[in-house]
Image (cartoon, rainbow, N blue to C red; front, top):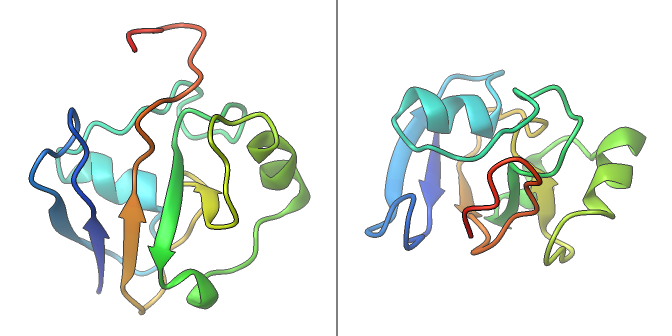
Length: 112
């Protein structure tokens, strides 16, 4: 099992969090399974950008984003070179450090 370290986020995990992800599980699925309510408006179907995260460490151990994910990331808020959709990032055996952006573009909830 790999560890996924979430850096502190004011609403989702103010103290940060360290969770274990099963090999082959997405970061989003692992977060939700461990009580971290990461947004996922499309129910992890790679149809929105609400689960956008920054992979601050371990990015080089991940499979590259496919064209669909890249196209969606073009629409996400605050994209940087470490950006990924957490529903599409599959954890292998290596640990990763993730930062959840302060904002997301969610036409449904718009609670920010």
